[in-house]
Image (cartoon, rainbow, N blue to C red; front, side):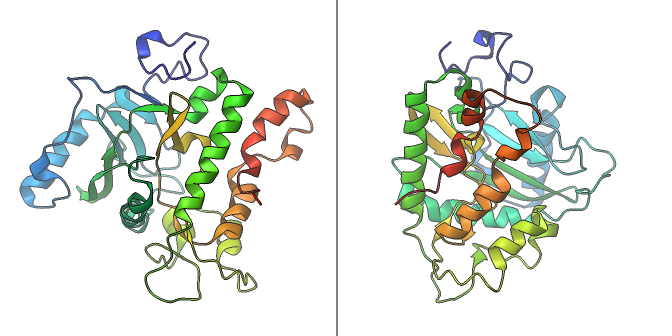
Amino acid sequence: MNPYEANPDNIPPTDRYADVPLYGRYRPQPTDFVPDAKHINRTTPEALEYWSTVLAKCTESTRIYENQDGGRDVFALGGVIVKSSHLKELLQGRRAHRDYSYADANEVEAIALARTVLDGTTKVPRVYFAAKVNGRDVFVQERIPGVGLNVAWQYISQRQKTSFKQQAREILQRLRTITPTVETSRRSYVIPDPDPVEHRGIQELEREIIFAEDNKDSDLSLMHNDVSQSNCIVDNDRIVGLVDWEMAGFFGWKTAASVHTQIRTPKRENFAAINLPEEMLSDILFWNDLYDVE
């Protein structure tokens, strides 16, 4: 199986994601939906009506993630990814009333910063729309061609996995060259957020790691802060894109590393009762040491 196969018709039934063929795989086609340029990042009445028609195209058949907590679902619609809760008539659950505007604004600004150091090497998505439609936050961004690293993982060799980890580290090092434009001694999201637990749905532990008063690390470089395998888009043994920038901020290497190991990645002890073979367990934990560099 070609790990970078993106044609749903060629995905075998044994594939881990065979039941969601649009998830984590994309090859542009001439008939793909692309947004009307005159409505991109516009909120005029005409533009909002247009984006409402776009949401109407986002149905269960194009949904690649359903948020069971009342938050936004994710849809793959041709050349775009759409985040919206429009299929939920009533918003119920612990994320039902989450204000996404902080995270969306943060993603827009973080992408713009990242593009200054990654452009030409690793693609970041263009944002087409980030505003409310019918009273609910909607986010529309470019769908980067390729395959999610988590999707390709089942088919690639140990050598390829090691190479992808090194590439991710190099991307993080390039992002690290970006620092706040104003002098500050405090860690912050790119767009400051007064309550990230409420607005981003992060754990209290994550907020404590990032903003604890006893965290004296002076490194305030830009960190993506969620470099999971699913957010790395790969093709032909290269990381060609990095997505989902809503958690990005001026946190520095050590703080991002702590979030990565304590929040983003699985723990060995979580598998103690399963008695997995060491080779399988090592593969599950392989991404945990992403920030462990000299």
